[in-house]
Image 1 (cartoon, rainbow, N blue to C red):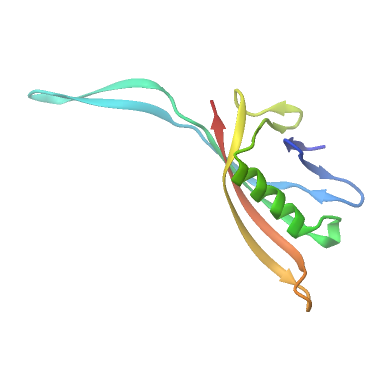
Image 2 (tube, rainbow, N blue to C red; image 1 turned 90 degrees about the vertical axis):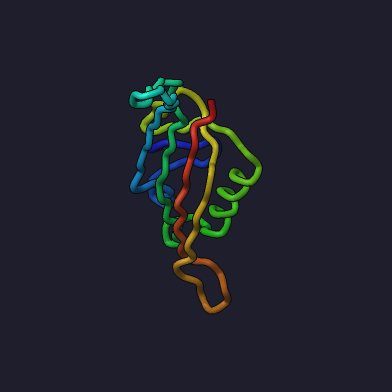
Length: 129
């Protein structure tokens, strides 16, 4: 097992491939700026911001997954506000849990009956504090 996000397991097995690629993490800080008469503004550190993680997933029937079912599960997590731990390499990412902020999907290949054979999803997670 490579990792997981709740019930979505990232895995490479003999008959199933469900992995993530191009993982990017963004960390921010929160600052306030106060105007000062006849001087430059003063910056004050307020605290850490929410981290964001994004990655892509490829779903292909040749590798034992059903693309439409996989996309629907991601959409359900996103639209229901589900909050889960993100585990990569056996260790949790961040200090707590994450929620899916957005899912952008591309339907790459369909057969002559309209069945989805290959799809990709770009998933953006936001830290839940």
